Image (tube, rainbow, N blue to C red):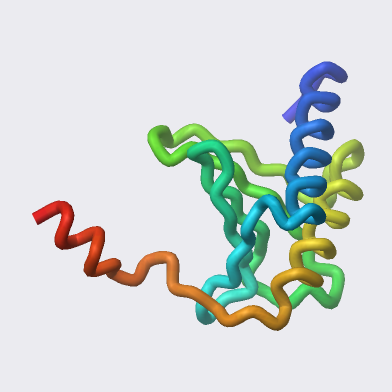
Length: 118
């Protein structure tokens, strides 16, 4: 997909903001059980760093962003000429912060939530 320079700059600023919030511990990333994915929530959006392989090696990484209330999404790959380095920096920062934290299952049934629904 071709992007104009304004869109590229906006995406770069967004990745920089996510990286800054991560470094300041203002954005909580979690490790998904049984996966190398990391995920976070920001302004009613789900952020996912992937793929589900360890960070070592030549496997491209991606940042996937989607709102909770819409099927819209943005995916930025580390192979991207303009934004790839920023995605890799974010991946490395998140990995450093989360490598020793316990994993979570984002799809586990939360009984408190279920009780509020029923």
